[in-house]
Each structure stands twice: as C-alpha cells, then as structure tokens.
Amino acid sequence: MTIRFLHTADIHLGKTYRTSSGAAERYEDFFHMLEAIVADAVVEQVTFVLISGDLFHTGQILPRTFARTIETLQPLKDAGIPCIAVEGNHDWIHRRDSISWMEALSQMGYIRLLRPSRTESGGYHFDPFDPETGMGGHIEINGLNIYGLGYIGTQAGAHVARICEAVTTRSNLLLFHVGVWNYSPVEIGNMKPEEALPLAEVFDYVALGHGHKPYTIETPEGRSYAFNPGAPECVNFGEEKYDKGYYLVTVESGGYHHQFRRSNPRPMLVMAINLDGAEHAADALERLRCQVNEKLGSTADNRRPLLELRLSGRVAFHPFELGRERLKLILTELCNPLHVEIKNHLSLVTRSGEEEAVAKRSLSEIERDVLRELVSAKSDYKGHEEELVRLSLAIRDQVLKGETDGEELLGLLLREPA
Image (cartoon, rainbow, N blue to C red):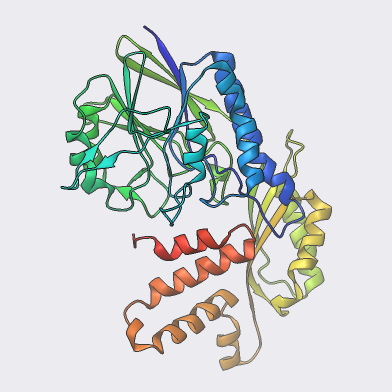
C-alpha cells in the first residue's frame, strides 16, 4: 500500500510584533501559511500530516489564537486526515499541572498529540494513542507505526538508546523536536550526529523539527533517515537566506521518497548599510537612501517586507542624530516595511587623541562593557560574565521587539546552557 504524508514543523502560530503597527497583519501570516499547507494536504489526499513541534509560538496563547487554530485545522478533520503532532520547546508550558493548548486540541480531535510515558528506571514507554483522552505515544496508520516525543532539552542525545529500546515494532517513524549539530542553526536543544545515528537502525524516517533551516541527515552508507523541513514562514531575522517549505513524502515498498515543497513566506530583508565617512546626518541619510534602493532591487511580491537595518561605519556626527523614528520615516517612504528593526553600530570620530579612542567605540560595545562591569561587581557571578551579558541582551532584544510574553522570557532563563 502506498502511503503519502506531509511533514511540517515550527509553524509558530500566535507570533507577532506587539508594538508594531503591522502586528495584526503579521499575526495572520502564520495562519495563512498553515492554511496553505492544510489545503495542499487535502488536495493531495494524503494519509496524514505530521507537525514536528512548535505549532504555537508560546505555550500560553490567547483564546483567539486557539480559535483560529481550530478554524485552520478544520479542513483536515472534515477530510478525515489525521494531524499527528508533538510538542516543541515553544509549545511546552512550565506549569505541568495545567492542561496545555496542545492537549486541548488533541482531546477535541484536531490533532493526535504523541507523548511517551516514563518508567521508574527512566526508560520510555510508548502507550497506544487513546482518542478518548487524546493521549499516547504511538499510533499505527495503514501498517506504519508512528512514535512521538517532543522537546527534551540539550541532553536529548543521552536518551536515544532508551528511546530505541522501547520500540519493538517494524516500519517505524519517529517525530522528534530536536536539532542535530552541524546541521541545525540553533544553539540549544541539539544532539551530536553520532548520538542521533542509532535512530536510523530503528526508524525508517525521523521527522525532525526545532531548527528553522531545512536539512537531511544520512547514514555513513548514504541512506537518508532524518529530515527537518525547517519553518515554512520566516520566524526570525537571519532566516531570510534559508529555503522555506515542507515535505511531501511517499512511502512505497518500504522506501521513503521525500519532495521539498516551497512555501511563500513574507519577504524578509536584512540590509547592512555602510555609512563610513559621512560628515553629517543629511549626507548619511542620502547614502542610506541610495543603498536601500539598490538592495531592494525588483520583486514581484507586493506584500510589505520585514526589514532589519544594520548601520555601520565611523561618522563625523553623533549617531543619535539618526534616531529610530527618523530612520523609520525614510524606510516607510522607500519600501513601506511591515516591521523594522534597527541596529545602530555607528561610531563617532573626533579630532582629539584620547577622546577619539573612546568615541570610536560603538554603542553596543559600551553597552556590553557596562553590563560586564555590573555583573562582575557581584562576586557570586564571577566567571559567568559573558554568559549573563548575552542573556541580558537577549532578554532586552526580545522585549524591544515587542513580540515576547512573560512565559517565553521565563523560558530563556530556564533553558539549559548550550
């Protein structure tokens, strides 16, 4: 029997820029993307759909996000196409005494949430999925055994042996929200390639998630066994250079044949603008206009882009003269972006010796030095200065973007060190 399924991951429903005028439109981007994937599944009449974690952008979502998710998944339910999912690090809630939105979707029949139970000795047990409770770790569809576990942190590699020991069936597929070093672009939640390799002996297809960049992993003999489709929509700046899409997989005569289907994310642009040598703000703004126009080029996509602007160079005027609002007005005139993030790394050049050496330092360098001194002032934190400075700046950046709630900020603090 031929089986066909769609494999996607890292949808991030509910993400937006809360302080941006384009927040409502950006919020809809992620639902439109899932709608397109669901529509493709229905047209292709696939046997099932896999979501390898991070369906939601945060564990604590708004009720309207839950309602929109049900609306978006309804065509799958109407077509009788099971949607099988695991939890990612963004889906996970820190208070395990509360039912999660993922569990609610599973109990209502919109997804089949797979989550194994644990034995007293620390092993894994994949109970059969129970539609009544919406719980279980294993589901069988047309002779294919599908197992799932979500995000288990940076020690995932140490769990592989126990995961494999718990599986006694053949024709197996695993959903696993984890990254693999050398392939995944993220810095946490990864395991080493050699740690992942034993999965290839037990599972014919490992459906990965977590890193937003697509990649495929092979055994030393050249057999592809693990697949990460990446995020179909651009979630964070830096992803604009990745291919975006999901997999359509055909299982025939025991072999897996995957086709990468490109999605259509909102345009995301990162522009590095060099203003080195600008004598005054007017000169810098004119150079900014020219460089932005040159980098925009021509595009057939009429959607308002997401834009990150990186200013660099030594200038003869104070960098604060290029304030955020002044720059945003120029950018609105040039390309009317839906959302703008500005990183101002300009440094001031003066004519005097000692003063010049200080003035040449960028604002970001001064900021890091001040934070480092504040952390060092507490003897309990000595030796951890760089780690805490990075964490502080990461929290600062998330708050300034206006897209992060308290739960996700708490997640930054609770994550294991890489």
